[in-house]
Length: 206
Image 1 (tube, one colour):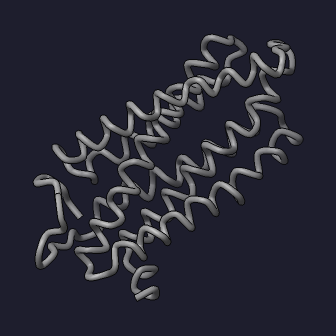
Image 2 (cartoon, rainbow, N blue to C red; image 1 turned 90 degrees about the vertical axis):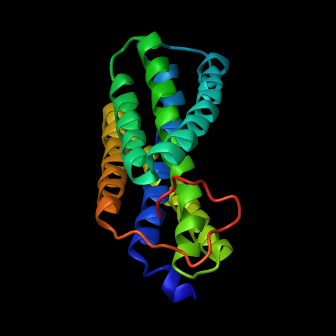
């Protein structure tokens, strides 16, 4: 069962999306304090930490993405989250505090959009493939937190090498990988389960 759960092409793509998206997200938030306490902003630690107040935007975006996925299908909705994340990253580059905060909010919304669709898709795909949904979901979380630990920790090296532009470049690369995997899911054949899982959305695709 474990071998099948790591050979299904759609599940593998979803694991990769979770790892790359989380890696980019953690990389940015690991380093944003350095950016805001350095010139030209020179914020105190408390003020710099206040940027985490943009997190509730992610709750709204994940809820919206779920509704749109039910209506239009996960394959159509997923890439938009990657585009939103990339746009938010680019907005953090100018040395203007309101624009940086807006960029973080947009990036956060894009990340939770992507993660919300991916994490909800994993058990549905596993069920359609005849795999235990819990096992597939556990593997998704494994890759998700591996991306956080491994990819996210690279932000310190990036900051040392090239400050904030290097961090954005690193995160942007992971977001591009997420987008490529999300786009590639359009070419993976859908599976039709023998019997639908409980509370299966009528318009969902697998």
